[in-house]
Length: 628
Image (cartoon, rainbow, N blue to C red; front, side, top):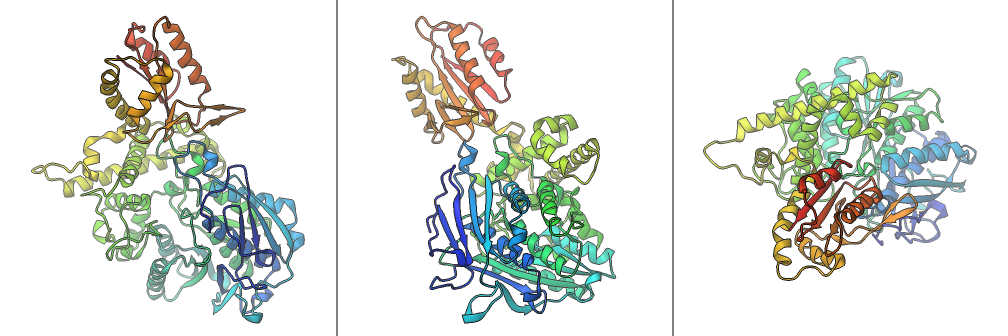
C-alpha cells in the first residue's frame, strides 16, 4: 500500500465489492472487498451483529447504506493526508470518487441523495469532496455461498419491547457512559441499546466492562450492540484521524432504528468537544475534528430524513462542558465506574505499562482538567505519563498550551469578541444550534465557553494546591511550570515571533558587522541560515493560493510568513514602507502571522516606534522588527 497522500487536485478512485478490477490499493486507486470475489482476496472486514433474525428481510436501501458507510470508513483510513504543517490547506484534505454496487439503484441514483451524503462527509472529515457513482448490484450483500464473507455475523441481537427501548451511540468514553447512566436512572421503565464500534481489543474490553456494569446495576436494561469494520493486514490503515467514523456509527444506529420503526437515536457528547473551536489562531478550520459538531449532526439528520422524513438525532449534552458531564457521575453515585471509561485517542501507540491512557493527547488533557475541576481525581484512571510533574515532549506541551490559552481567552472575552474571533466557526454552530433565535444561541455558546474557561482555571488551582511545594523549584517542563511561566497568555504567533526576535536581534548585527548584505537576496540567504537553527523554515516555498494569484514568501513555517527588507544606499524609507504595505495586501488571510525583518544599519528609519506601529495596526498578528 502506497501511503503517500494524493495530489491536491486529483480524486482518489475507489472501487467497491464486485466492481473491483484488481487488488490494487495505492494513493490514486483503491479496490475494497469484504469478501473473496473472482480470485481477489478480501482486504476489509465488515461484520455487523444481526439485529434481525434474517438480514435478507431488511430494506435493500438500508443494506446499501451499511455497505456504503463501511466502504467510506475503510477508505478514510487507507489514504494518508498531507503534512499538518502545510501552509496550503488543500494539501491536507483529499477528494474521493466512489464506485459502489447497490441493490436499490433507483433510490441511490437520485442526485440529492449523493449530494446530501457528500455534504455531510466533506464537513465532518474536512476533505474537499465525496463523489458517488452507483451501479446495480448483482451479488447479495448477505450471501454466504462459497464461504464468501457476509455483511452480518451469526451473533443475533434483538430488541425486546422495542417501543420501550432507546438507541444511543456508545463509545465507552466519559460522555456516552454518563449519558447511559442518566437515561437509565431518569427513565427506569425503558431499556437502552448501546451501539458500539469494535475498534480494537482495548476498546472492546472497555465497552464490554462498562456495558456489563450497566446490565448488572440496572436490571439488564442495557443491551449491547457491537459492530466490526476495519482494514485487513493486506491493506493496513494509514490515517489515524478517523473523521468518517461518525458516518459509520450513525448509519448503524439509523439502520437499527429503521428496522424497529424508531424515529430517533441519541448522541452524548459535551459541547466543547463537539464545537471544537480552534485552540490557536494558526489552526485551519478544516483540520479541527468535527465528529459530533452541531453542523455534522444537522447534515446527518437531513440525510437520514431522505429515508424517513420524521427522523431525528438528539444531542442531550450539546450545552455541557466535560466537567458538567463528570457531575452526572456524582449525581447518580457512579464515581467508581469513571476509571473504566476510556478517553485516550492514542489508538496506535498504546500507552506503556498497564496504563489505559497516555496522558499526553488532547483528549487525555481535557479529561485531566475536567477531573480536577470536579474533584474526582481519586476516581480517575492511571496515565502512562504524569504531565503534572513532567511533560514528555513538545507535542504534549503544545496541547497544554492550547487548552490553557483557549480557557483564558474564553473566560475573559465578551460575547461580541468571541463572535469576531471565530466568525465562520460560530456561524456554522449557530445555524445548527437547537435554538431558533440566533442571539439566544450566541448567548448559550458564549456561556458554555465561559464555563469551560472557569472549569480549567478551577482545575489549575486544585492541581497547584495539591502538588505545588514552595520549598522546591517548579519543574519548568511540567504543567505547573507552564502555568508559572504564563506564556499561554500570548498568541502562538507572538511566541514564535519573540523566539525569532531573540535570535535575530543578536545574530543579525554580528553576522553583518564586517560585511553588509550585497542586496535583499543576499540578506535573505543570511537570514535563512540564521533561521535554520530555529526550525526548518522554507525559502520561497510553497506558493500560497490567494484568489487567482499565488504569493511566494521569503520564508515560511507553521503558518508564519517572514519577509526581509534591507534599505540601503539611495533606498528611501518610503520605498521600504511601500514594499511592506504591498506585502501586507498580497499575503492571504489564512496565514497565521507575518514578521517583517528590517535590517537598517544606515538608519533610514528615524522613528522606529512610529514605523512599527503604522504597520502592526493594519493587520492582526502583523509584526515589524528593526535590526541594526
